[in-house]
Image (cartoon, rainbow, N blue to C red; front, side, top):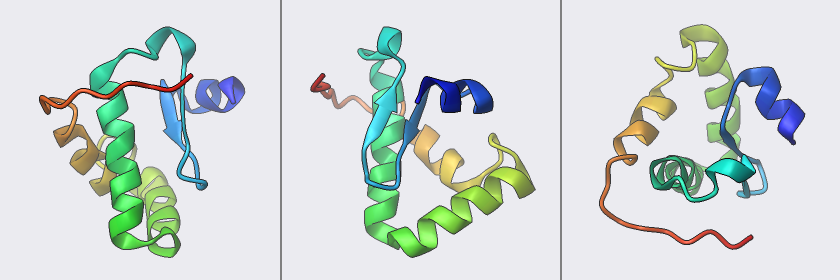
Length: 87
């Protein structure tokens, strides 16, 4: 999975199985965890059949920073809730 992260320059990724992979040295990065959990919430809200094609399309059409799903997920990074990651 690290090769996929390296390929796209990501620190973490939410997988179609609703699993999250985070680089080991960032396992306690709360803003990153909240960002990835926001993607899980987006999948639950919009459904996998809408989320996955749209996030891939938006990534290539708008770029990572301007992707609507990414903009929404970044809003959760500064939330005050804390999560514990099961390793």
